[in-house]
Length: 629
View 1: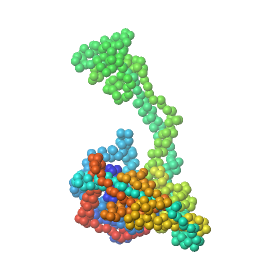
View 2: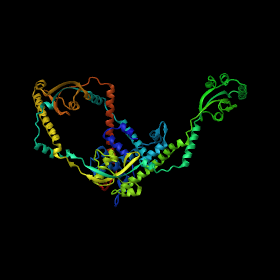
View 3: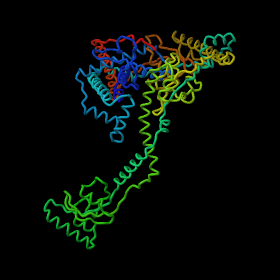
View 4: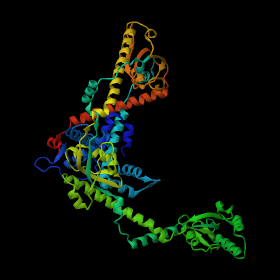
């Protein structure tokens, strides 16, 4: 449900807003953080408290996100993470308050419609999916509705700010001209293979490089973890089948199949709107003709007053329960195939009905259908058991961080041990990247605590703790000496190539022409009117980036720049001319204007948040922020 905001807001502020709104959606409950005296809240925002438990849940979510994004390493110190998380939660609480105080409101109708949009499948609102989705994020329905109201109010505020932003036509034209600009450049590429005459490095040079770059020649550290896991498959094995429930499900199934029976019918209708007595005489006379052998279809074509079916001999096609008025339907579904009814009266008039054919779904025997019912019963039971047991696992492992023994005892789980694995490769549960990230996190590897609960899949969760750590060890010099020699030779060749390029640059800056400095091993490409996205016209994308990063040269000077290419070659870029667009399409101007308006809206929103914070009373519990387990 954050997608609507994400679609409209990009950049730093957009990320902050999405994080802020996501914070309340914590997955697992935990106990109060404090064991000593002092404030029992993480922060107080005006008159609203952010509890310690809310704060710790949010820190855990933020930590796991950073670990996942950074290869299992926390890119910031724990206290910095905690401080940033609390700041985000304070911002969130302030935004909730200011949107409410400013008169932004979400009606029950709007809230209900939004929930219906989020949990509608194939055009039908799925109540079970809604309740399961709310439960899966550790909320009850009132909590979820409150959070969603806050989010929708914030969207209203963002829309108001976005609608008040503006950008001048002159600014749009200048921005568009900048983006549509092209450049004429010359590129001299110095081939590293031609200019490199580097000799094989000596043993001393190889040893020195090895010592100075030892971290590059290490056998990765490995660890073993203990873990407990919960899987839906394991829970399903212990589910007992209720035979009475199976029988009830089968009876309901049979009834539903019977309810889906369809009947092909024809009818003759005489309307009663003008003269009911005359209509009754007419329908009874037609009934007698049928009893005497008259053809039903011919009578319907000649006398029926239902224009839709009369031309088809009274044919109404296939009819299911609920599709016709009650007296008609009651009669039709009591008839035998091929029979003709007595006169039936409805609000439309008098009918004579003929049942042409009957079709229904074949009822599958109980012996076959029971497997489907058993799976359904197990799935319902397992879903509830899995959620409850996962929640207990999360809280018990958190409250007892120094061992998994209490988890094993209280929940009746088995303690398992992994094989050795590295940050990048494992087997079994450690084949999962998320498990490896958590295993090598500071919480598990350095602090020796139980991990947060890790979701391997929607039906499989684990908690891990460190069993054994095998530090990284250096690969012997003998095993990597040839690799180091190649590295040093490549470095030497690059230095020689760069020296040749810099000499040519100096000569060009001194007034020599490009053709004069071109020599063997140097390739010249003259590219006219190259655009910012014309990557196919250059040999290396960095050439294009640097070409548009260059400033036009002063009168009598040359704009020239050297760059290193991915191939190891060195290139000189000479900026010959900057070409401004003569005409810019209106569609391009509209796109630039839209982007500028979005950036302005982000800036305005950021400024508004700063003003809100300056006028708020905020009390941060720094002892909690700086407390690291």
